[in-house]
Image (cartoon, rainbow, N blue to C red; front, side, top):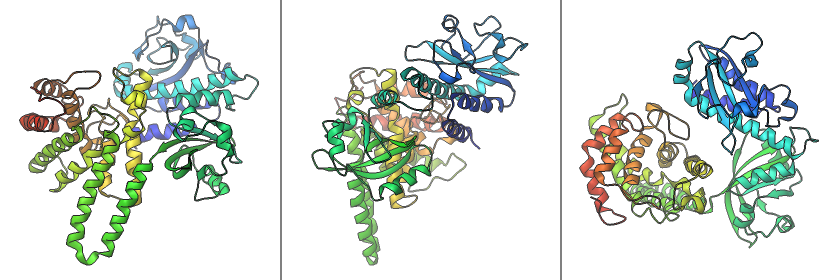
Length: 509
């Protein structure tokens, strides 16, 4: 099992726990199963209320926590962490330290690991520690919110106050539905996007969700699944229109919590594409003509879908056209050289030319105030922006499933999900490295960064071609596949020619 699959299984285990202590125990159990690990513990600052877990989770005074570093470190015997955290008589020093912080930047707690070789453990598991620290912070924050909102209620019961706070943090339409089908809460984004004045007007409509299954079947579906289960459904708006949405919903107690992604334009386009494919089947005797029509339909669909992301950001201009041409240049060279252990097909360059258009389709879900911000993004804003890779994959993978496995959208979905992964594993969303990253995404990464560097953005001026080439060469084997980087360096004049032929602004130097 790969490390990513192990982490995914761990998260499913954590999310299935009711008590904070059980979730934290899942984290420490996973860590102690790593080779060379002697013991693991999690400590929390004493200013964080943990309800029923207060007497179970080891605590550290806020004054001592303020002295701790904000990054992963190896602590010596003089650290502010008490030695008794690992039990009476435990030897010092405490070794590997991975903190989790609150919104104010203060240390709220930390994961502590005693290993046979602390440095070796950090080198192998630094990325895992960051992920686990983030998950632990979420567990502690949620428990703290529950405890603060109503100490008289069980810590496992999300109160209306807590749910309201959580919903307001999400910049997508979010709802909470009772088991009888009544809306209990929706956030402002829901009301604004679907044209409802308030919760009263929403509950006054007889059928907001237009579902194929009846309500009892819907509850049965949710009961049989864990986590967010994507469902394609429709919503009737306050102005009597119908929008198609992806509904990511889950049971929360007896209620249903859901997050919606509006895919109306995409669904309509996909239906037209399905009609075209059905028409091709009926005209099977004209196979040659139908094949040409399908290729044209695919290209048109790719370009049309890509416009969903491009029209949101007026700065992109010819960005999509250039990305496709850059990727095709590299793919042609890879087909000629065959530098990998696997074979690269002759038609790969044409396929990647089309698929590259959709690398940023997920940006349709990014709020305007983040996508069009004239300046650097803040931490929370950047977290939302990063989600465009997963939103893009969800959109394309759903359409791919509708069309059948390994359609022309398969390659596009992989590029959309992984084009921000780094060769050394420091990228997102999954922290993949080297050849675990799909080849198409490794090609897309070089093309996307070169074009971003040489383009003007609201927060920066365009770099020159030579500056961009130097930067990509500097990041060889760190952010970029060395084989693809070397090909880029040989083709840099071809990249410059494309950049100048398809400009957004006056030609770059």
